[in-house]
Length: 295
Image 1 (cartoon, rainbow, N blue to C red):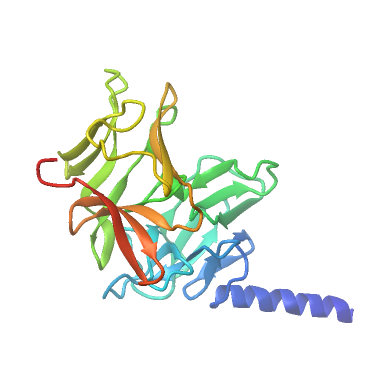
Image 2 (spheres, one colour):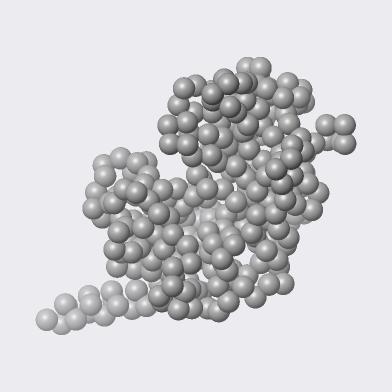
């Protein structure tokens, strides 16, 4: 009996800590939740998920940021245009197996809205920065019911697809924050333009509102025709997939020690590739598009 009481005490204490500011795991299930102040940390400690307030704002958002970078850099936001104005937010898995963000424990602020229901749903933060919803009973851990990489904010990460899933109609694109205090989409959006009915050659574009602001030109098998400076490099590899099922651009790291990301910048209206300089403790521009007004 004493052993049982000890186990129950440890379990309750762990759950309390998990919900009030401590996190020691990379996943949680329907018996757990994350409140404002608690965080979820990826297995190798690369990324962290929790509540934050951007810039000078006091609004609260659920986001993912780099864990070990001194300058807090948010790569993804769940409730981009639906902020919470106090610390009552709660991230949990509901009865249908969806990840939901609740306000004052009743109003749904944001949800994954997955059409598939898992037997044993689990939410996991991967070391790629991807937040995934999956079935713990599924023998294939990569069978995701939902993933944040399908719904990017302003940042394209290594391993993330930018483009279309023609089977489902899912269109992945990045959109700049409105400003430093507001992660709601601003004027500039980057994605893949493709007309499946006309079978046009796809290319990557930047839109300002609904107007074309910049385009890379179509893919020629090596690079986009309008970006001849794009070439093999020691930092990352890239590819463009174009078939009956999918049309997307993707890049992956060649050097795992380098931290790099693609960001749609509202202030400069550019799509910047940034790399982290640990010596200077700052992000540096590796490349940018458009390069000048003629582009």
